[in-house]
Length: 200
Image (cartoon, rainbow, N blue to C red):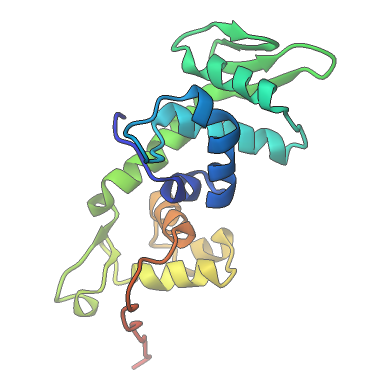
């Protein structure tokens, strides 16, 4: 995964706010990570994994200082094994020793992140646009369910389980893709006219 993502896209991928990703750049990644090009804030896979781990630790109530965050980043930057400070990477686990030990399934987190990353890289595996289906509006493959309808419902607060129940024809990957799209910022310019669904 050599390609980099913008902070907004990276934030949507891991389920956090772009503001928090930019803040993390200033505090930790800006001084430790290699930038892909001057003036850009591109995220590579290891940086995305680091942000996902820090986001998870924060949700679990574990607040890390900037130096502890750098230790986590350097630990994750090593391909196999290794440690930095109190943190170690062993057998697919991220482990912290000390008074409050922490163990995180890094292999599972990495696998989930890679799967979601591939959805963004290959949207044609999830959605299609065919003039003969819903007037060319992007729909999920093999269905007549417009992407914009699911994204709109997610943005309006509908839960994933509710959508899975209402649209059983949608796969887990399709719902993952819709969740990522729902978190992305709106593109600049005039929005497209929304597709209206009517019962016949």
